[in-house]
Image (cartoon, rainbow, N blue to C red):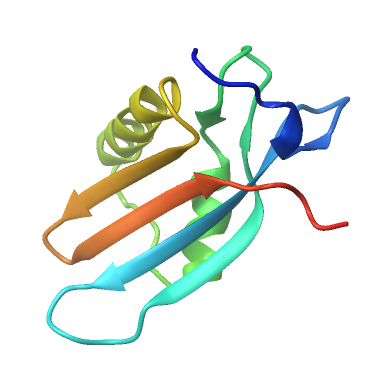
Length: 105
């Protein structure tokens, strides 16, 4: 990993990381943004796992009905988070950008 996670930690004991996720749909529609501690650093790197479910709820998007898709999306994001504090996910319906941010004061 090439960056310090300390500025993004919301809970030292749990290792949660604050993130902002922006969803921009293709073909019109409103861009939606949500912020919460969706990611964690328990493994020593930024990692998105179960937080994806809350993120989808907060953005008003449907849950994945397929565990394989869920794991594939998390893997794509986690591979990017190993290198920098943001990740982009391009899909047929739109683009999601997850960026780690400092927690609210």
